[in-house]
Length: 476
Image (cartoon, rainbow, N blue to C red):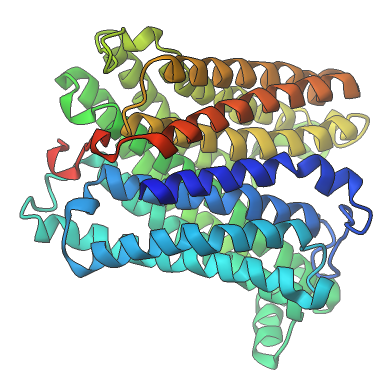
């Protein structure tokens, strides 16, 4: 598992480091390609991010869950199957998806070989999700602890994994239509029966509407699920079972909110993606009610609200906790990078995002350029990069990182996050000046250097330093 982790992280760093070449230098790659069935999606850009960062992040996250939940010490078939899948996914799926993502310009480019390379990589994720769900369902029984004592974070992780599998299913529906169109006849019939009642017509525009709805629901379901899983794992890695009763109570309250919000998120995106439910805007104002927050954003916002209580409990715990080398946890740079990333995600997604939604009369007209820049910034930075970086910190914690490498990894992460946030937000919301964009990219470079430093430590780490925080020890 240590090999799977550092190998996967190394590939992610390398593939992401190639982004300037991939997007701006290599002449035969077309960043602006749009598929006829998804004209509002940049196919080439999305598939690059999926293969370069998303797939490695999910494999690292699943491997971390395997270790933190203590499944590496279980001998039952599901746990052993999960271990094998994680290893082979890291060894095979990560290179396939990474290289495929670089060259997946269109679905038919280079005899569709890059497309099928990525598809093969994502098939591994489906198998991992199914096996992890089965392992988690049987674990309380085979461990003898029972289903009431595994703890709130355990169930947040379980529901998050189940939610990601639902999201992946929607993604495959959208991907199939993107490649094959509305065929065979049963596919066209389903789209017609779904869209005609609300649109009053069935043609290629209806197919585009359905396909883009289901792909939007796929991504909007997937990311909150994964971020909820990161929150639960963060609590467990930092010793949730040892927290004072007050902190555990606060965190458990947050986890209960998250559990309800996870179920609601999956439902609303399923009926709006695979069905024809039109998500309304709430608290509307302005001409024609143009300003207002979408109902789904409020629902997913409750996942973040629950995480606020977990964050409060985690910070309260850190004020009296120590790192392994005896330093105050609350002043530790690596731990602070987790807190900083957590807070910045709030500042970018709900705070700035809600502000834009309540001022759509400007951002859909004169400020459309700012809206487009923010959409790209918050997707790349707050939804993808920051949660992935927090995941790496949890991996380093699990393998007992300490000393200078711990401090410098934390410093690089902290400074990179802050620089990227300040200048990225300034670029997207104030100036649209490329200078700020370059400075934000410099912050990304610092975070990349931190990831390299941490990955090199992980590669050399003694596996006996693995710190187990098992689900058996969790308290509801």
